Length: 411
Length: 152
Image (cartoon, rainbow over all chains, first blue to last red; front, side, top):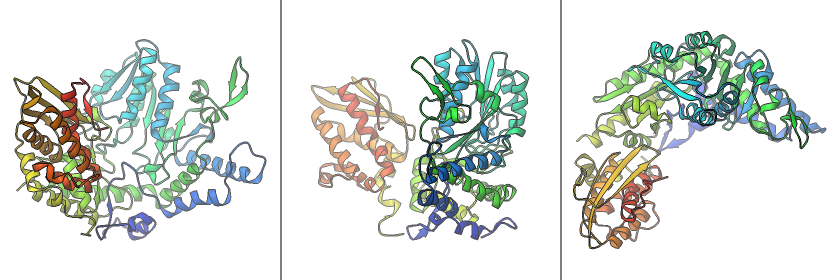
């Protein structure tokens, strides 16, 4: 197993119990990390420990278990604030995941900032979760969505982007790393352009969090959203970061317990952020697992994780390029984690089934990015996406599986 | 390869590969008096089915669309099987096909003719909807609901 120097891949793999699962007598080659990543023992243990030693409802009990649970929940918030470079834990709102985070921003910032004729600027490479919530708020406010074009390589066309950024643009919302192409977008440049027009800047960090060191203050965004389950944490938990001054000014999302200060039938007043956005009993163990995932990632270290993944991805691009009739979709200069491709004459779904039989897990379909598929003129792609535990040997199995698909479908 | 996970050739039988490479009855039909469209939102497969029905009997069937080998071959084989069937027989055929594909019944296999070649799909839960898209679309066409058939 070849790994980047100083990166103990065997040990990393041993941290993930599920990687020992066998399919057809061989360990599974899990190349679907952009959909969801597997969990290290440390995360599983952290979640279990909550239920075993410190679980109760939080923020309201006078008893010891509630105090313990509250303490772990809030410590996890501080840990996540540190993980993303936030200035204060009060800027970290726990949400179910990126989708809920983007819905929250679209709904609350949208009601705050959008009016008739205003525009929200997105790009053609957005995930549906960074399109549909904006459409919903646009319908309510009379705003409209504008999409910046993507080049043939799968990069945002920055000139096209700048041309669509006008005085009507009130919000810019862009994906940090594309789930379908792996493109790492030039977000600091986009932040600068957005700031020039005084537009709020929202970043969808679902695919960035497992691969890159996030520093929200250096990125120059106003909101950043990520999912726990894509960065080796539990599913059902994610983080919305927002600038404190904005979280204070935008309206709340859901109403209920915990997000209020006083409730009267005539009128209620709201708690300060982050509680203002966390109505109801939250996912209590999730943040603890997520904080453990952040610890795990930072102990390995981002430069090391990123360079290991890049070496595996580049090897995959090299091996796949040798396959006749295979076209890579997304050849941006800066990429993370993802190799998307189509093969002449073989539908991605059929490729996925053949690979599955070989114990190689990939995703096939439109990757919740139908406008992007349309842009590239394909109904779907096959996507191999890599995480910190993937190996070159797994890439070899992917290539061998594609060889079998060619034999089956191209007599 | 373990016994519970058979060869991929059990799914992609020669007949299926042949019909996916050279689909029969492919193309829009001029004299069609029924048509329906189908969509599988999971993979984006689209299908348009055309029928010429006279005196309650399907005289001719054709299709257009873009899909995987399984959905293309099932549309191709289904359009072949439909010619000459009464509307009620056609719907029965689709029902039997669906139970076979979903693994609910093996009893129907011998009554399905060439369509029995899709029996292997029952071992591929993620692909059952690819096989049944054409059947859903036929139902939409015969019932003229005007609503596109969806596998979801």
